[in-house]
Length: 133
Image (cartoon, rainbow, N blue to C red; front, side, top):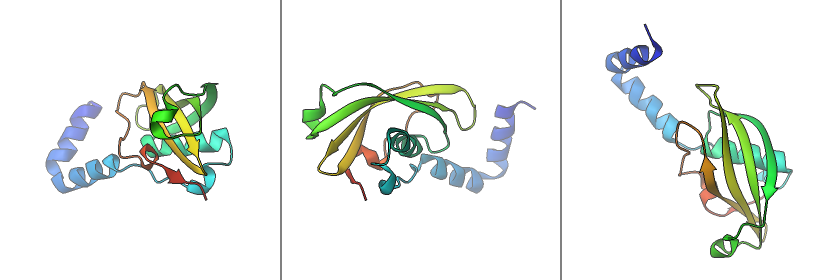
């Protein structure tokens, strides 16, 4: 039986379990605010975990900055990050590009592009300012 048919059969036989799984997937990953100002890699890992909590981090690079629209967010500084990752289920390679912004010890991100097959979670707490600890 192909994987899609197996998932469909499971969902039909176990509707409550399927609903719980969907709710869990829809909930963003938790950000460890103490890691936000550690390093570019740590910040990128936290960002990825928040937007794609089942993804596997591969690498990250600063690819530009400052972001042209940082002032609209009230940011004092920004950098454009390219975060490379593997899909949690597919293991396919993906990349998201985010603007990482900072002001007075708080951080936030704006997703500029995301190649993942599953859309990023727009409930990620980094969509708003998060105070670093």
